[in-house]
Image (cartoon, rainbow, N blue to C red; front, side, top):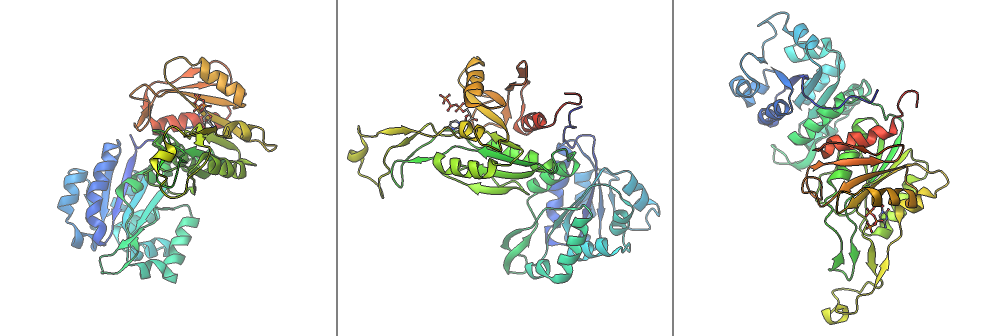
Amino acid sequence: MKAKRRKLNNTRVLVGITGSVAAYKAVDLIRRLKDEGASVKVVMTDASSRFITPLSIELAAGPGNVFCGMFDNPMAHIELAVESDLMVVAPATANTIGKFAQGMADDLLAACFMAYRGPVVLAPAMNWRMYESFSFKENLTLLKERGAFEVEPEEGPLACGEYGKGRMASVERIVEAAKAALCEKDLLGRKVVVTAGPTREHIDDVRFISNLSSGKMGFALARAAAARGASVTLISGPTVLALPDGVAFVPVTSASEMREAVLEEAAGAHALVMSAAVADFAPSVRLEGKGPKEDIEGGLSLTGNPDILAEAARLEARPLIIGFAAEAGQDTARAEDKRVAKGADYMVFNNVSDPEAGFDVDTNRITVLGGGSPVSHPLMSKEEAAHVVLDLLIPEPGA
Ligand code: CTP
């Protein structure tokens, strides 16, 4: 059986809100979790209600879904704990994290945490000095060792006027972490190398040849593989995308830089997923500075770039290799030819002239070639397509 899909629909999420200036962001978080199909109940600490009122939270979570006092319903801490599939504490203060780590249960949220037995996502928010303090670090480490997932705070201006690491992570990152926490860790212990984005081949220091790849498919693959427990290295050409959490990142510019990084990282890896749109050609000579256009016009000579995938396929400790064939049309024959010629185990056919499956959109319609008959999948999000591709790393029982 293939690994379960990783969505928040039909998931019962218990959101804990603690006393930080970031508490107002919980409104957006609750809405986003509900948009993803989760049902949400909220526990607020006393301190959090100084920053945002339970009424505002109730407007987002729905009537009857916000709990504050330990003794409003003496069994709430057990019922909420038992009836939740996921606990997300955002913002999570040093005080609450300390209580969780040290086994205190003197408020409803801490008591819920103690009674709860499922995945936990913590989004700390505090002054950077507190975040770096020995006691806090020790408490957080303890919780992480016990399986809690931290969505690390971001660096920036803090409420106290100082600058440092302590701003609560974006709601988007917290939602991603929530999804990741629910993922079956079926790629645990495997190293997966993913390439993404375009490469840039410089004519001079300001001009380059490239393509329209946004990197979205590759970033989705890296995020999904990390969520499934893989140790992920993402090698990407220039993009504007936010880095997925928990992924080692190797930024590159040109195809030759990507080649070097891939050959180094892929040797000994379990899988290499080449979703990058490697530029096919590079200028034979790179001019310095900004070359006069007269020197370029009519005189641009191009050299073919190395085929990175084909080279990786010749490595001695060769990983399983999945390529992405960008084709302009419905015919998969050329993609299958590429798979065989390059030595990929699988080739994911991608019709980039399809407006719902091309560059820079959030959806894809893929056909997987290799390992038997082609398998065509319906239109889906790039995130879902990423999981379909990663399922290729999990052998079917009996196969
Ligand atoms: N690829 C590569 N190195 C290259 C070109 C492509 O590793 N120099 C990889 C891509 O990352 C992808 C696969 O090969 O996984 C197919 O890429 P694609 O662009 O579809 O094919 P090309 O070989 O570049 O052929 P063409 O551009 O003519 O379609």
